[in-house]
Image 1 (cartoon, rainbow, N blue to C red):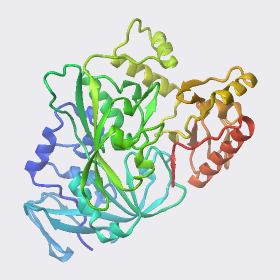
Image 2: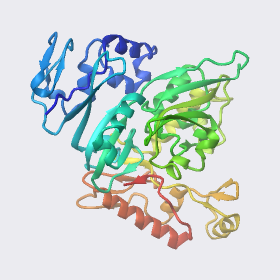
Image 3: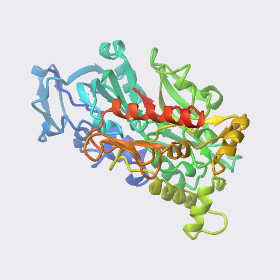
Amino acid sequence: MLLAIHFLAPANRITGSANRFPTPARRFPTAANRFPTPAHDLTATANRFPTLASRVTGLASWVTATNLGITATNLPVAATNLPPRAQTFRWHSPAGQYLCGMLLEENVSLRPYNTFGLDVRARYFARFASADELRQLLKLPQVQAAEKLILGGGSNLLFTQDFNGVVLKNEICGLEILSEDAADTHTALLRAGAGESWHGLVEYSLDQNLSGIENLSLIPGTVGAAPLQNIGAYGAELRDTFDHLEAVEISTGALRVFTAGECGFGYRESVFKNTLKNQFVVTAVVLRLHRRAQPNVRYGAISETLAELGIEGEPTPQEVSRAVIYIRRSKLPDPAEIGNAGSFFKNPEVSQAKFDQLKNQYPELPGYPVPGGVKVPAGWLIERAGWKGLRRGAGAGTHGVHDRQALVLVNHGGATGGEVRQLAEEIISSVRQQFGIELHPEVNIL
């Protein structure tokens, strides 16, 4: 088979990438993982392909691999014993300056790439770190003919079976404040690569003394996934600060810019989950943030937590972020410890008449006014129906409902996606029967 190592570019391109990240590496967890050592050390390449890392050995001034189908010169690594399932599809850049190999693996476990920790497999798997790399992957016959899944952090997915298509993992990095009109002293545009960690973006914005997304602290996943479902929490949504996004059209490779109006944002909705589903890949998101703090503490738990933390008066954006992180960590399980995808269900919206009817029967029922009705917390409904803390499966239970937040379904270990889906369906049926309200998953079920 062919040599299956991804040589990104000459050193000048790599150091150029390093210069795009002037702040400490801790602000850029995704970028830090891709560049764990100085830019000239191409062992970072091995970290991008953990299944091959043990087979990348030695340092040499050059390597010739004509028996593998290529000749690679001036590359400080030697590769041996590559697995037969790895294939390299190659081309030259338009400038003809370097040889670029795009790795397309077969039969890859997706367990490291979904926060439920489910061990399903993808027929094909590849990564891309730029819009150009994505376009090249989309030209491959195997990719063109297969169903495609664009993967970010895998934090909003429930796999119920193997994926018989190609998984393309978005690793486009970069954070920058765009130059602005000098007359605008109130806002700034912040551009983020779609493969960046969402929480890393929040931290970066706070370091730059920009506010507007601090209420969305600690939401798992990547920047590119945020606009797909208009992420929201604690009284804020992405659309509150969204300016535009850039996306590559899968069928043509063309780059298109979408404004907020064109994205069709709704409650955990966008055109990318409906009319434009599976047609575009988000490559960058641009937010318009405030230079002067405008803290949003309308959500009751934030005010209560700020007081608990001893913060008085008007809080800073950093303090609001601290409060939100405190709340989330006290209620939500860490996917690194217990497999989960965060909130599994959307909060349902009901008519005022329906809410009044339920309020008479359940006086403690909470509700939040929204245009056209009232939003009811799904977690409250699930808990009241008796599901909170329930476990299913062999032994002490392989899966169930989290014991501190009924909105979260968990994989304690050894569960299948089908078992988690069956539990979700039973919960939906139970809430429908008791309250006459239909719950809908927020998580994408595949």
